[in-house]
Length: 323
Image (tube, rainbow, N blue to C red; front, top):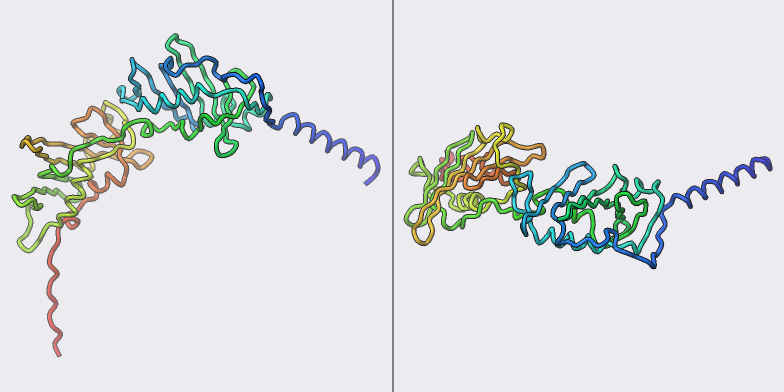
């Protein structure tokens, strides 16, 4: 290598180092730290939208003191959880500045169009506030940036994990809630079978059409009756039916009867339709106005149920060997 080549190589190394120094995020301590979102008060927020890096968005709106999901028939959301998140957001400060360079936004996932989470807040007075939550920087810190501001900060007040966009993480997922011990009859209809179970006077299960040599596996009926009586959803979907749900020609229809201590008898019906893109099943408990999705594990107990799951037949004796 000639002397000129060595000089040029040295200059190139210096240029690369200078570029890295300029654009690489640097943490600085801000002795004049302030709150990132100013005088934001959690109680003043009336609308909250969270969008993730796939474009999926969850939306909450507040009416009075109640938070709901407007797009799903005002389904009730967990107001306490939302309040806690908003209070944490209000505490984010500017004490740990990482960079003032716009070129670093994409790298830190806080760019306008490339982020881990985008959070939109609307105040009671109509004021809009938007900020971005980006990549993590350790076990308890993430990058954040207020929209319209080039500066990026670190905070431990929130995480992208807490800002989940699946509605099932923001609601009570209980869908059907009937004491399983009160069930006196249950029927399951699917493409494989029509099964009708009834409790007898001793509390044992009987099956319509049972042959004299057959017996019902009581624990199996108890198990599936319990799954119908206490059923959890993945998330609420709609208050209006849609052909895509498959509920007009259900994969399974479940009807069960319960009787309380006062002798009041009630009948409950659940329709299980087709599957969504995630493999969950659409379902409608007719005592609820909401159509929801339930997990494949829950649904397929009913859609795949066959008579042999619940009936035991004595083994046929083998003939003694002839010598």
